[in-house]
Image (cartoon, rainbow over all chains, first blue to last red; front, side):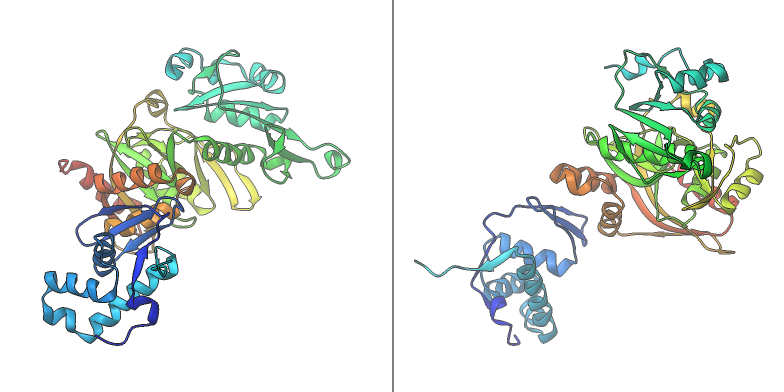
Length: 105
Length: 314
């Protein structure tokens, strides 16, 4: 994988006050964050990444592993793929849908 | 309230022109258009004339019946009333828009009604779109101004499709069905002459010139469509129309997620409805085949729509 911008490496968590609701038509999806009403169209990769995070992946490595399980190690190791993954994660950070995991008290 | 029962019997057209003018200027005239009831008060004769012409078949509500809103379309006072007479629409004591020249009174009423419906329709997801129905299945035509949406809608209405609405698609949050509004179709500029020629039987209001939208005229809803305005329809197609001079008709599938986002941008209350609006819109596009459609000739466009309607439901 290429070097990712710091926040996208993780660890992160889902925004605890946010709530997502999906509609998927097999390849293209729309997601609403219910509290803000923010609605986004997701391409398949964005949808897959968000699904990984909702399933508990809390850092880039975990997302990569989950996707590699589905796509195969070769695909997941591709540099362009890794870059796309980081772009998706940066978008989720910008949206405030994921946030850095707070330091333990 | 049972709106259908409340509006049964009396129609706007059952009032003589003199009686209609008097009623508008005094206690108002209450009209039902699909799920919406509104009361109009106006001292402008042109409003009475257009209302009598275009809403003649619409049920009239009694003075004790509930109306969703009351609109006053009245002349603006002061020296202007002699020099440059103006008219304004007032809802709930507040002007809806800036005053307009007196000659724009009826279009102003229609625009104010659109504003009131979109501000009040919380049992529906409202979309800026025309809706027509055939065989119980409805086509939703969302489009920005200038795309030929109203022209295509008016043509379809005179070629076997039932008008639900020219401007506002009302998607019931309860069951996802489309509620008819059955209000006059607003046509602008060249579209007026095109439809006059295409459907010589169509009834039009007088033209209003120099509005913000250019020349505007309203086409009445065929009587049978008004009579059926309590029949909701099942959404079946979302068609984004675009008129292109001399272009052959071209119907291209559009991804549902993309269609949903575009419809959301065309909604008046999606942002207010939150999760229920999302579900209603997602259910709508799930139930519909979605297309981009470009056309250059109305007859070609009608043929494409007729083929859609002839295909058996999935």
